[in-house]
Length: 327
Ligand code: PBG
Image 1 (cartoon, rainbow, N blue to C red):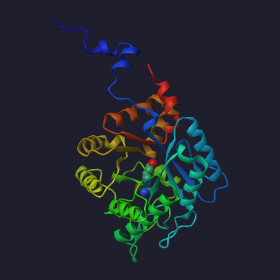
Image 2: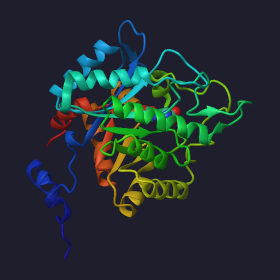
Image 3: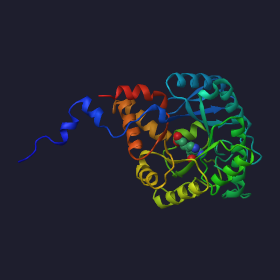
Image 4: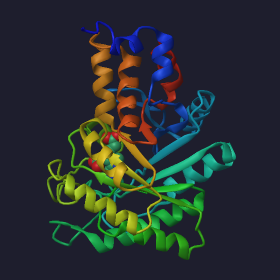
């Protein structure tokens, strides 16, 4: 006897589909990235990124306010200072923004901040170059990142998130934070950050595309064909004391997210990067997908693969898009 209906019984109505879902996407697990740029007269849209802006102080506060009203109280801040340098960096611009957000929003807001040098450097690399400008120096970069992280934590950040991919940065940050009496500050490691082509809109927003020196970031970010490098990097960051781990980008690296999150029992975040968000927006703008449902489909894949935290430019729309994709 053939069974005409077996698996389809549980697919037949919105009610039963809701009851049997194995993973749930919720706005509470999302973090909204923000770009705050020194010296902007008014906020500027980021190419390809609907509803994402390069903000100034005032517009940032208004955006955070509207995000809070939309149920999003967790953010990842990228500070973009006006002056670019190759040494003698100042972290005051970003620190002052953190302090201002903390003053204005108190503990309603959970503030994480990206720690990297790419928005600060004349050459656009994520660290300090050697005197000949041929490669990114590990030791000098890590020392500067630890200094930046301490300044951001002192300004009131709940969490510092180094995205540079130098060796030994997690241990160095943890040590610097503890030495400054900042034991409660979390470290979220961009543990498995790949050398990806999906960062395009971000590099415009953060003024961080490589300009000179090494032609790209391949000597510090992970090769897409090296999942073992991602594993080693994650194991190392776990040992060095990371509190939260991350895979970045998201959709092209779901296999990595699934493997690492089942192997290392720390909370795993996934970063749905600028190019991933923009790709869905581009399809939707051309009538080639349903915007809300497509975003929710990507988020569902992240949770299914083991993410407990989703960093996404669409966090502020999550409630609305989740509602729109019910049934
Ligand atoms: C830089 C950094 C990048 C992103 C976050 N931090 C880009 C890069 O490595 O070039 C990408 C985020 C995105 O594309 O949304 N340290």
